[in-house]
Length: 115
Image (tube, rainbow, N blue to C red):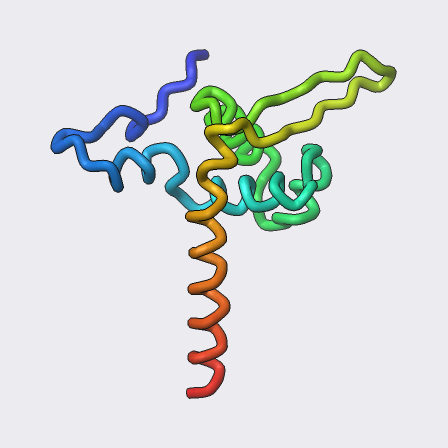
């Protein structure tokens, strides 16, 4: 069955924010990218790092990120086979955005804890 994301190409006003959110929006993709950037580069490591994501959702999100050229998958011909993920150059270009989100989140959590 072909992968059919509803929002991937929906951008009627050619908005750059919409374009970005079509690629990395949702509950899981930013967490997956952050995990891969921190060397959680295997499926089982990502599952442990994000315990609330289902296996099927993780598979789907990894496929979408790979289809969009944000990550690449390397299959090592071993017994048992080993698969590792890494950010592409395009994916690396997203990391400053994710780090700004991290900084904002840390500051917001600190401010909210003082209320």
